[in-house]
Length: 75
Image (cartoon, rainbow, N blue to C red; front, side, top):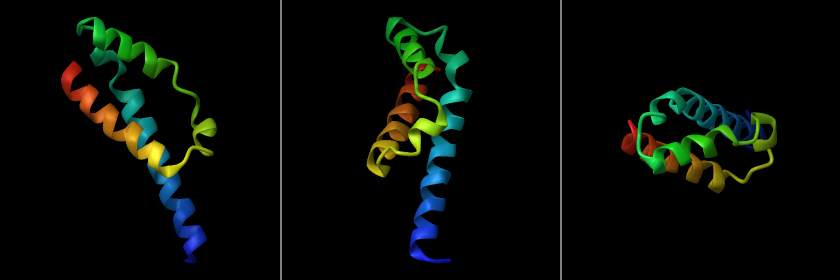
């Protein structure tokens, strides 16, 4: 597997991970405070997976880390 193909696979895996995290925790944030409700609304407004394909890797990592922290607070 070449470097380009490996990088493409890694980015796709990251996108799928972010999508799984974002779709799985939305119901849990409903019962939280105002911040959690606002976070749930922001998650619902996230662009579809296809739009994330052009997102730089650093931004996807940040989204993933932020989601993990917010999910821990809002559950």
